[in-house]
Image 1 (cartoon, rainbow, N blue to C red):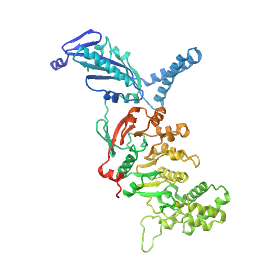
Image 2 (image 1 turned 135 degrees about the vertical axis):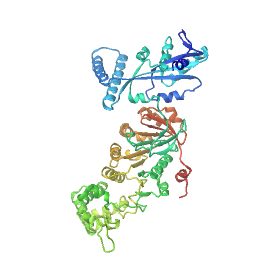
Image 3 (image 1 turned 180 degrees about the horizontal axis):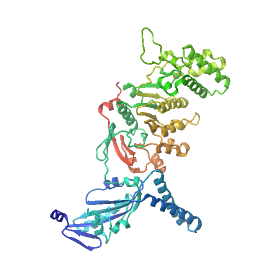
Image 4 (image 1 turned 90 degrees about the vertical axis):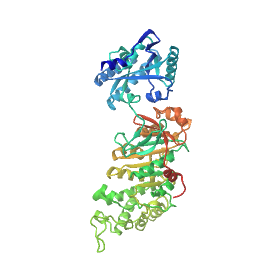
Length: 580
């Protein structure tokens, strides 16, 4: 055993030149990392540097006492605040002190709110060559390349032997270089360059989105996996960048994976594709003959409201009609309420929920309760014969024949389908908001199976100042959908409009509630907006601008990976082909 150890030890070490050391036949010089990039992944930067030479990276981590760190931070914050207020300094000194004070406050918040641990981190890079001139040239070039990537380093002149000893596996934790050259980092920061990582993502029960660009590894992900803090996704990209192809591919794969999916489509982008895979289409355009009877009651309503189902349904219809028609007169509202009850009564439906179920007859015996068929419920037009006020009757008749025509006839789409597209190309945000509120209601109270809601061109909904603010319900979905084992996916090409609402705070809030962010190629102006708002942290802006069609950068859970979006020939024909 002893002889084996001696076989791997160097036979000769020369340490007479401050610029390098010589170990056997190799000349060795080292770098000490002093400053790290704030928004990039250290290991991904190292991978991008050409490998035409040999080098080693040594990373040392030492976990700190959290309580001690918090006490020191608190003391520093209080003393620094007092120093700013009491000591006369020039503006430069004040700015520097303010910056360090903000850093200290941010670190304390990360520890207290996000439960981050704190580590002392030291990084050393050792380079090897066969000649003196080459090692001196290599270390200068390497230092320059690191600096171009925002990594500041110093050459360990006079200390090359110390760094070399740190690189060999002897566990020399008392080396003074460690205590003199460390940075304090939180867990999430350490994760950005920790060496034991892989770009190969393969989640159980996931779907294949493509292959990693750099190493061509399969990218198979399950957005509903418990290891991700939510299943929400934002997709950005210019027209023609491939984002619509990706969205359709994802829809198809999740459809085959038995997920429930609702798509809000303002440009008619998905209707043809969804018809091909036998999904359901519901159009808000009064010219199209797709209907959902707003007066029909289903099992979900009964499960949510119980014995108050009829009363709740009546109030829901009244609120919707009066809001969309701007009816505020109490007499008219009561007229509508009585008409709804009378319409239900004509179909033998009362406040007793047992009247919502079919009765057994000689020809059919139901072992369990069966809800009545769609044509056993009244439709909105039946209200008109009970409305007393002629002026109100005329207003409602016009409403039911125009904006609410899609809700004023017997349901002719399968609401239990796992895939429904809401064609909102005829823009009517009040109607869209009503549908979203119903979906949210069902998600809250009904046992769902991994539901995904897609909102294409989200900026069209959130920037409409003339209608009831649909932005509120979309944001509520983002905040609460995680609890319901569901996901919301937003897609947009007009980044400026998306981030213009509420001075950009709305867009940033949505992005903060998205675990997954997918960036296809965007124009320079859009990239600058994203950069200014801090949305593309960890992403090289130049790489974002250089993406080809069908390439995307995906950011999630401290990972940033460039993907080649790939679909099978069958999937591609479904998405792009004309044949059904």
